[in-house]
Image 1 (cartoon, rainbow, N blue to C red):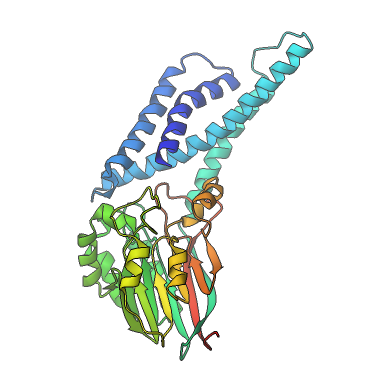
Image 2 (image 1 turned 180 degrees about the horizontal axis):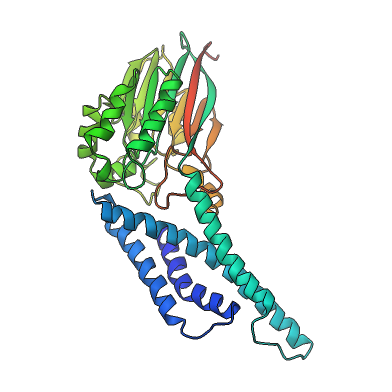
Length: 380
C-alpha cells in the first residue's frame, strides 16, 4: 500500500500541475509547481517512512498534518485531472475520425472544469477534516452462551492520540464512554501514534472512568515504543492484556498482542514474530464461561472460532477511512467494519475512534462501540 501511494503521489506531482494549467490556458512555467508538489510528496513519504511523526514535536506534528491533507487533495485532483485528460483524448480521437483539426486552445468549458476540480477537491478536504473531528456511538447486542447477567462493554480502538488528537478530543470521548455506564472499557490497540500524547494531563483523564479498563497493543504502539506506552497505560489505571486471559463479569476476556494470523499470512504492519494459531492454544480457559477475544486486527478469525470464542472484537481497518480506501479495504479485510458471523463466533469490527495519516473521514466515521453482552443458553 505504501509503494502504491508513493507511485501515485510521484506521478501526480508532474501530471496534476501540467493538466490543470493546460485546462485553464496557462501551460508555461509549469515546472515550479511540479517541483513544489514533488517536494511536498517526497517530504510526506519520508516523514512516514522515517517515523518522525512519532516524535514529541509540535513542529513535526504540524508538518505531518499539513502534508497529509495535501496528499489527499493532490490524489483527488489527480483522479479528476485524469478523467479530464481521458475526455480530452476521446475528443481528439473523434475529431480525427471526422478529419477535422482540433482546436488546441482552452475553451470556456475546460477552464471551468479545471477550476471546478480545484474547488471540489478543496471542499472535500475541508468537509472530511471537519467530519474527522466528531464521532458516533454505535450499539450492538450479542448473546453470550453461559453468561449469567448482562454486561455492557465500550470498545474504543484506534484513538490515535498524538499529532492530531489530544486532550480535548479525549475529553469528549471519555464523556461519551461515561454516558454509556459500561462495566468494561476496551482500548483495542493504536491508543497513541505519537509521543506527544504521553503526558499526565492526557493520560490522567482515563482515571476518571468508573469502570474496569483494559488495553491491548496495536501496530502503532510498536512504532512509538510498546514498553513506553504500557508504562503510561499502567499509570492511568488501565490493565494491559498481552496474550493473556482475565475472568471478569462472568466473561473469559482474552486480550492478544498484535500479531499475524499464522506464519503463512502477510502483514505490511508486522511488528513481531507471533502468530494467533500458535498463541491462542497456549491460553488456558474454562468450558464453563463464555470467551471473548480482543485483537487489534480482524485476522485469524478461523483460529478464534475453532478455539470456542463466542465473540471477537477488532479495529485496525478504520473502515477504509477515506474514499476510495473504503473500496480497497475489502480486498485486504473481508470483515472490515460492523458485525459478522463466523461459525459460532460473532465478530465486531470498529471503524476506529480516531484517524491516522490525514485527519479526514470520507465515507466512514469515527466510532465508539457499545456492546451489550446478553445471557443465552449453551448451544447444543
